[in-house]
Image (tube, rainbow over all chains, first blue to last red; front, top):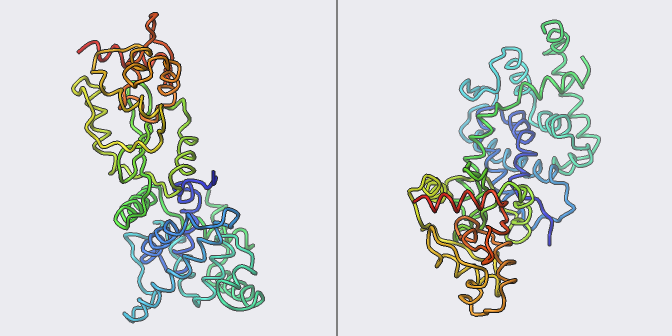
Length: 165
Length: 203
């Protein structure tokens, strides 16, 4: 007996986080493709995944590679990712949310990735350094720089929302 | 604003709605099926004997489970014994679901879907293979089934085979009853067995 969970539970448990990561890294329009490619690829490899593996880090690593494929394809089409908002698949109708999503989209790729993997997926910077291929300190700095930019371009949203409700 | 606040704002702004999540999962199931990596597809159907879990490999229907068997536990067992590449993927089970609906409506007397017998083995397996010979609306005693399976004295083993039938309802272990009277044991509960027998008696 192996004891590995049915893959359905993996999708249910980590699907929402991986979707947020894909949306942060790629924008809403391309996120669905990256999400689907990530889980299809993960499902193929799932029986060989070591039982003690960190499933979330494994999925984020796969989604990172799939997102790079999508980014490269987008670059070949010469359409900047930040300029392809798709209102039909936008995550929320709330304009402040859309502002935040486009603020994330205008960050450099490495900062978007570092923020997504640390703040959305909860990975430690040592893991993120392996995924991004650089030092732990560089990963930490990319996330910090990105967060600082978001704070400048998107100040006080939480306070506004608190007053709003 | 703190990183925590910003993070929760981000999570909220990037969240998918439930309908979108379902659509993505359906798309994944279809892609997995097309690429041949959907080892086990499952769905549940509501019936007069409660929700039934249906699971199929690419060979055929491999498991029917009553709610009392704990569907989560059943899926984990399928992961351990067949493959963990399991998704909720209703399409593969459309025919089974339709035939069950017809059966419970009294419009179907036998099931035509291909069966995957891999969860059965040995004498228990040969017992289960003979059960479809007990026709709709009929019953047979444990002793009679033991004789049918070629081991007349093994009526206890027949009981065990029925109690561990991976394909209840479709493979009709509910038609096996004690010769002394009563309906006897049933893995879906005695009430479910009575429901099935009276459904079939009402034809």
